[in-house]
Length: 287
Image 1 (cartoon, rainbow, N blue to C red):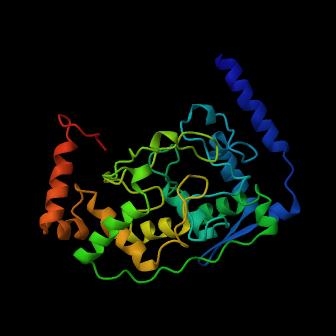
Image 2 (cartoon, rainbow, N blue to C red):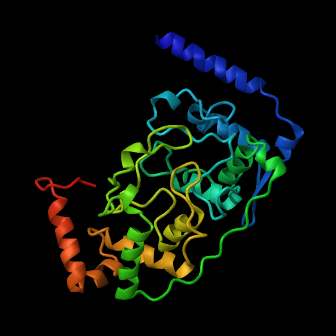
């Protein structure tokens, strides 16, 4: 069995070396600040580090893919979760660069911070050669992120109301644990089961850790998943109120939002009830 496995790998590597690289693909570039990435320089990096999961042709069917419970990204489709651009549009080069640098929590995609900035930019350029979308479309215009308003109790309370009104609880659960009534039915663009994010976790989301990152998720959505964009549904100030409320669900993370919420009678009662439920001997689900 081992000999067969190694033979398959060798045949795939031979296939890779024989793959034609068109002039257009060779000329594909990425622009990350002052750095220009080049596809021709990213090819060797891709086939050294990435093809085992993402496949020789970038369609997510690499040798390791069958063993992963979240399938690798299909670069041919040109659909990406973490973007600063509106839903349905291509991401910026910087968005792809950030994903390579950051990696994705709760998946087998690690951070590639060990590569140089130029190498990561070269990878971005080469990844873009897989999808025909980059030949006919331009990335969307990045959304505008207004300055975060002052944190107030009223902001948290309004965010709490929006969490119910927008029916976020149907997927994420009333306490934000990712256990809503619809959670078990959700699938991604690969028809694979997908779990809603557990907001009580102290881990960062796949697309970042900051309040601005959360804001972007609300306004751009996570393409390829059931998480939609709310840009046409809520105002910017509403999105910030949601951010403030969701931070209070991370009751093991002493954020400014949680500290303020705990100073109120309503907030203290809710957070203390969550702590009791979320213990190894309690009735809740551990994050």
